[in-house]
Image 1 (tube, rainbow, N blue to C red):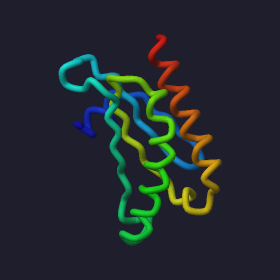
Image 2 (tube, rainbow, N blue to C red; image 1 turned 45 degrees about the horizontal axis):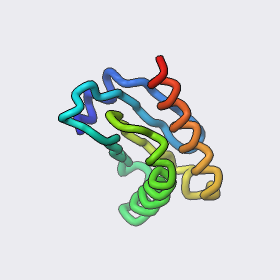
Image 3 (cartoon, helix red, strand yellow; image 1 turned 180 degrees about the vertical axis):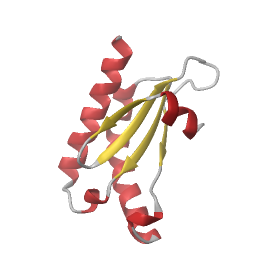
Image 4 (cartoon, rainbow, N blue to C red; image 1 turned 135 degrees about the vertical axis):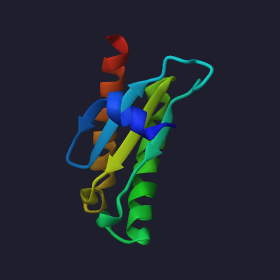
Length: 107
């Protein structure tokens, strides 16, 4: 996935727990399914903390993955608040992200 392309030309979704950049991929041969990437800067904490945040966010995404649909490139940038938030709060933010993707698909 070309992260820079998604950052520069995609739509931005922000919430208390994460920021996401969403871009529909028009080439069906290139991406027949949704592609999701994660970015976590070192400023968030050491590798153990970043990996814990990534695992929690990845699981919340996995539970909603089938609702995203195909041909989407999504870059997720979790925030430090993910560690203090309950999993249900994180899942709520991911559901709002999925709703945003569906809204963009209909346009």
